[in-house]
Image (cartoon, rainbow, N blue to C red; front, side, top):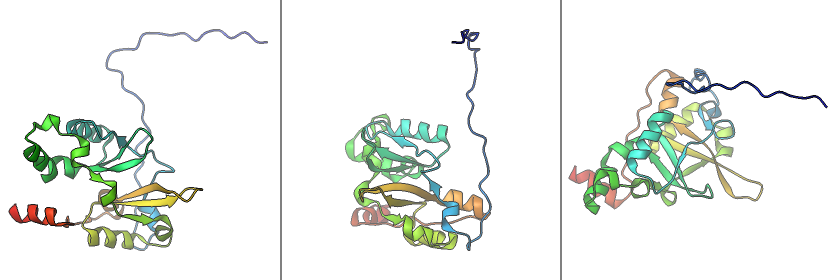
Length: 196
């Protein structure tokens, strides 16, 4: 059997960075292109997640570091508990939480302002596979959301989050803005909007 010698080692120099994949620009699309061309597919890209019991400031740092505007909130079994967006972190939700609970911003947790799973609406991958980019734009505008989640089913028939559509990515790929207006979904949201 061949003898192998140890590889030489040296100290890590200060201010060393780490390698990350090259930033490949997504291909340009038109409204007639297949919808999957603008979907962030979790079979190909790792979903960024966060624990519900971390602070909103930590969530903001994770988003900045990852250069994303949405994190999946998951438990230790990786079950999706909800989502948190950059708009949640800088908008009314955080201010309402701080005010209602009488706490400092650093004490506000992700679970306090996330959109819980019970309030999330999803699109089936089967519908996405037969849709065009224009359908995705229309969906985001109709719902007034900046993101839309896509689900598939595993071999047991359980839902599995397959991917996301993001208005920001759509805009980059279309080469034009995709404007959506947040729509109040329940009485509490309408009440807050009227007081503003």
